[in-house]
Figure: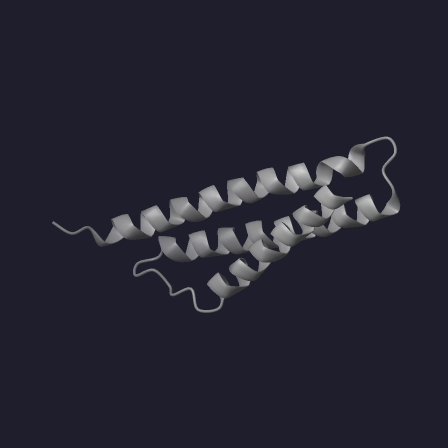
Length: 99
C-alpha cells in the first residue's frame, strides 16, 4: 500500500533535521567571537556564519512549506542553493576553527 503523503512528510522532517544541525554548527562556529580576547576577524567570521545560517533556515522553511501542498512543489533551484550554503557554512566553520 502506497502513501504519497508519507514521502513528502519524511522529506519535510529531513529538512527540519538539517536545519537543526546547521543551527548547532552555526552556534559552535560563532562561539570564538564571544571570547574576551576575540578580534575583528572572529567577529566577521561569526557574522558570516550567522548570515549563512539565516539563509539556510529561510530556505528550509520555504521548502517545508512547499512540501505541505498537494501535490508537493518541485524544488528546482532550492536544493543546489542549499548545498552551496551548506558548503559555505562548512568552509566558514573550518576557518573559525583555524583562527
